[in-house]
Image: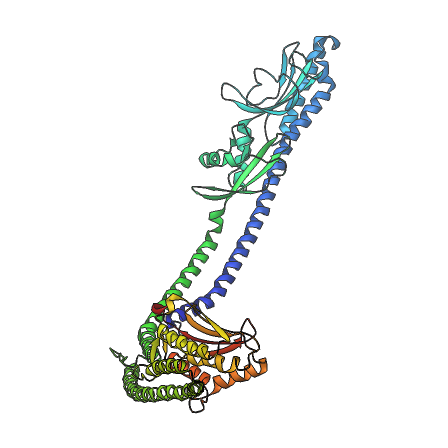
Length: 571
C-alpha cells in the first residue's frame, strides 16, 4: 500500500465527480445549442417578415409608378397640343393629381409620388408634408437609389421616364418619380423594434447605416467592420460578434428592391444568463464538495496515513537489514501500541540476527579452510610422481629445479593466514606450475593475456591453478598435436572474468553439460574435484552470479572460465 490515502481519496472523489460534471457539461452544452438554434430560427423568421414588409412598401411605390406611367392622361399632359383647349387640359391635370393622391393614400407608409414634365417645367406631386422633390432628378432611370443632399436630407428615389433615360444628356417627355425619405424608413424601423426586433437598422457597405430613432449607435458602429457580406450576399448566415459589452448574435437579410440589408442582433449574454447562473452554481457546489474532500482527506492523512507510513518505513529498514531502526514519537491511540510492539519486535530480531550471523561466519570460515585444504594433496601426488621419474632418469638438475619450484609452490599454498591473493601473485604461481611441466614435457606452449587493471585484484588463493592443472592432466594426456594453453583476463560490465582455453580433443556437449551440472549442484560436503572446489569457493566468497563455467574453446578444446562480481571502486 504505497499510494497515499490522501491522494487516493481525492482521486476517488474526482472519479465520482467527473462523470457528473461531464454529463452536466454535455446537458448544458446541448441546452445552449438547442436554445441558440431556436433563437436563430425565431430571429430569422422575424427578420424575414420585416424584410418582406419593407420590400412590400417599395413594391407598392413601384406599382404606383407603373400605373401612372401607363396612364393615358399622364402621357397626354406631356403633349399639350393634343388636348385641344384649356378646359380639357385643366380637367386632365386635375384627374392626374387626384390619381396621384389616391394612390399615395392607399399605403400605410407615406412617400412622394410625382410626375415631372421637363420640357414644360410642370410638376404634379402628391400632397405630402414629407418634403418636396429633390432639386435634381437622377440622370439615368433606374431602381431605388439612396441619396444624401447637402442640406442633410437623405432619401430613396426611383424614376421611370418616357422615353427611357439611359444617358445624362437625354431629356424625357415625362418622368414618374417615387421618393421615400429616410425619416419614413426610421419610423418603420422604430415600429419593427416595438414589435419584437432588438435594434434593427439598414446597412449597406460604403454607406452610413440608417438607424431607428432609439438605436444604440455606438454599439452598432462597433459591429460594422464585421458585417461585410461574403461572396454570396443573398445568403448571409448569422454571425457571432464579441464586443466590450458582451457577445451578440447578428442577423442580416437583404431587401432585394433596395440592395440594403436589414440587420438586427440578439445579446447572447443576456439570454444565456440564467443558464450561466445555474452552471456557476453547479460548479461552486462541486468545488465546495471537492474542498471538503480535501479537508477530510487531510485529516485522515495526518491521523492515519502519516503514522502508517512511518510504520512502513520502519518495516522497510528492517527488511534492508537496518535492525537498529526504532519508531520515534509514537502517536496517540492504536498506533502507539503498534509502535511499541514494533520496537520490541525489532530489538528481538536484532538479537536473533546477530546470533545467526556469528554462527554463519564461523561456519563459512570452516568451509573455506576445508575447501582450501582439499587442493594441496591433489597437486602434491601428481608432482611427487614427476620428481620420482626424473630421479630415476638421473635428471639431477631437473629434480633440483622441480624441488625448488615445488618448495615455492607449497610455501605459497600453505599460507592459511590469508584467504585472498592478488591476481599477480596467482599468475606467478600458475607460470611456475606451467614452467615445471614444460621442463618435463616439451609438447605444449602457453599464452597469457591479462588486462593490466586486473593484476591488483584479489581473488581466492589457488582459484586459477586447478583450471590449468586440468588442462595439463586431461587435455594433453594423449596429445595428437602440439598443445596450446591460453589464459585471458578481462572486465566486462562490472564482472571480472578469467578463462583457460586449450586445443585438446575437447569434450562432447552432453558430457560437458553433465560436468557443469555436477559442479553447480555439488554441496560443500560432496566436493571431490578441484573444479568443484573453485566453484564453491567463488560462490561462498562472492555470492550468486559468480563461479565456474565450462564451454568449448575456439580451437575445439575446453574452455574453463571463472567470474566474480567486483565493486565499482575496484573496477
